Image 1 (tube, one colour):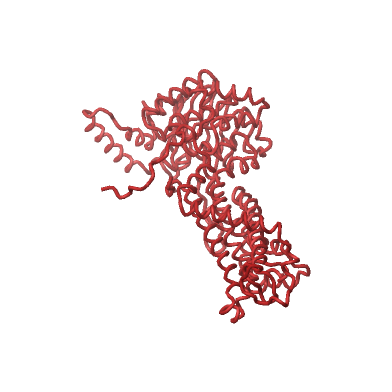
Image 2 (tube, rainbow over the protein chains, first blue to last red):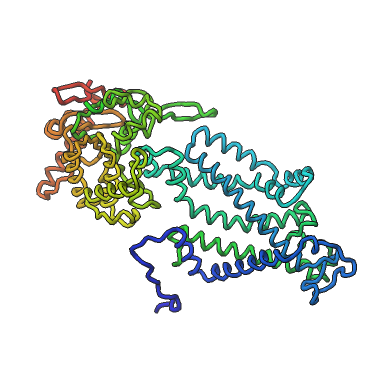
Length: 302
Length: 307
């Protein structure tokens, strides 16, 4: 008795041509319904957010309007207004754009730093590795949250760019450790020895021999980290150490819920932002899980 | 003389104690000397962990020698910096043991085989492709497989890709580190015979590292037996197989399985006898620290580690 009846028959995809890493990932995404739906939802959200934010004027949206304080959703204000009479829908769009941009920028910057540092430490080993790893250990033992709060207080002009830089300064260490560990394993393989005996210079071995073999791990890790970094931004803003109120973000909207009255009676202020964070995080995580499976041949679905 | 290895030592520190001081050394290669003549095949035999692979990797510069000299056409390779070593890479190449890890899974055959060309010669993509295709045909693979990836080939084919890569620069010396131990027996013969063919065509000298005495006998003109980082016996193929002197060599030879079932009893008896002799005579062949004695010549071609 076969149980797997409704599984589609395996599609023959040009057997003689070896699939590239990207096509394997794409196939895995398509096979995993949840990931595919997540990808579609996330794309739609991002399209709307980035598309609509072109037409919205941030200055106009953050302007205080005393005549419309806490007005519930209506035709004029689709998601009502907050305590300053500011349109929540507009803030939601601009905020989502800011939050996502920040998350993406942190992910890319930390990824780039971590990649360079991790590859160098892992490939060369010895004292170079020792020095780099001790520096990373030092950064890791620093109380991250406290230092961010101190920086926020010190930096005079605090905006999206400075926020990204401060976060990136701390968050690259995890990436560097991961990449280093993978590089350590990779450089022991004979193809690296072979390249050395063939006279290939070190930088070429790192870039063109080892890096392609790490690519899937890097993509997976960056995807999963993206969700975390959006969360970090929202979290810090919620605590009051993120972006100022003049720069709307998802965290600012959620933090209005610290007011019990807003939490209980004025759901339109905080609920949409919370839901958006939830949906985005889940979508990115589901996509990341599918990519993770694609990186490991034993776990693949398709 | 093409290659002359003199008193080569590779020691690894063993760290221990509170301050991670060096408490002892693992003597992976301990005072090994041998030389290779142009065009011959020298076999390095021994059990796992006896230092034969380390010796090969030290000669090609993958591992730093602790002491000793590796003279290649009169130049000491161990004293050269990486930059100075570069021109010699052309002349010394290596065939790796594991054809699965020695080819980068993300590279096409063209890129794998052309890698040495790109480092040493400036060729147009067209010339490069032609050269790669001709060598692929030489090693018995079809010329249109240049756009395939390593995992599309069988183990024997992969090993031949590895050999093609090593041949690309017309080297003088090839270090073959157990080139067939990862392959099944039918493919082994195929690869070995192919290696013999190209030896004549290209005038190659082989340093053949293996633990399989049958293969060594088939391939090698001269043989060095290694045990615990030292050479215990060295001689021509004839010397070693017909007249083994050192107790370890005898033991190694008695371990060769005999395919004839009628001889099985005899083989077992011989093995027991050698085992007994090994137990009794051990102290005569090794000094009190368990180290083999330096080699002593007993004939012009044959030397043994006896006191």
